[in-house]
Length: 495
Picture: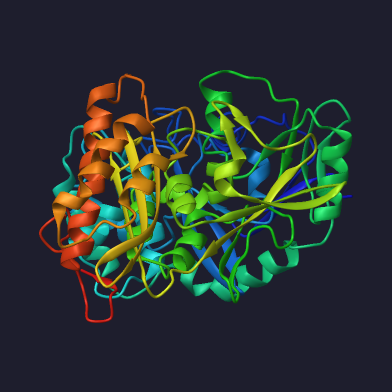
């Protein structure tokens, strides 16, 4: 058992043997290091002022990702390289992204600027081929500016990131990779005592044994939800078990049935696998939070927290996904839809841990559609999330799986609409009416700040009709407001 947190900072290994389990990375930087270039804004992972970069090894190669330090727990950076805005300027002057922001007037009050700089630093190292203005807009969706305006910031991004990779971090990448590789060990890490600790196990066995011994501990994955418990609810979490170092828990792979997503795999990692099932998964995932949120947040966490408005569960339920749960008593598989029992209640026993999600590929006769409805396009909570998987032969619906989020206390299938849709003919909209009317009987949604109950029912019905229109026409070219898409000859969505 290792009793110190280890990470790379300015080329030097830092070891910490004392910190509170709920210490955020932002508080460590500002209050202990006194690295105050990183700013505290919203303190909930929305504004991006606190953005820093974490360097990690992916398939042996160094990758820099932006993260919100305000909701990331300090213990989560074990084995990473931490880069902040203070680290970028070299003996020859400002970093290329900093210089571009100066030259193109990308800063006024400057409060948000360090976060923009760090997001652009990660974009600079992403080496995106054919970088476009929209690519930059997507990358910066998690950074807010209230005085400069985004045009000069995006201009600076294009100016700096289209040039060749030429900074000190690239020059010493091989050295950094070697140092990070040396930090990766097979030892469990625990800082604290039996009553207050941050524990990062390396194996399933150690995870399950410790959680069995401390069932009151909080399981931590990406912290995009748990982080807000600390910063907004001001909860004291004396025992934290971090899942990010468990071997195999953060990996994804393909098997004969489809895709298996490790419960600790981030959205950034999972997206590359899930989008191969259908492009609509890629579109919705690109609207879950921001680059910072998706680099930390996990698909498993989105399921385990049991939110009725989580974006992933409706899509996975419509696809017929299953989950695996493990404890010291053994393992069991469960249909994802059966995991959600009632608001705030899931089918998970004491000491059980969600370990993976299995997502089957679409059959040849299946068509999938998914839509997220929210007030803002980027980085917003769903008012309604809808997903549809229809089995269609010769223009007739043979079976349907329809799932919604935001329409009940849990992600839920529209069983009445599914039954009514069987036998419907895609070329005859009149045969859809029973299914469309059934939506109102399937759900009794609440009214809240995001939407009224009547609005949700109207939207849910409209989205089912939209899916049927698209599938019947074998095109989404005229039904998508953002990024027109259609079907190619092979049946796959294309932009």
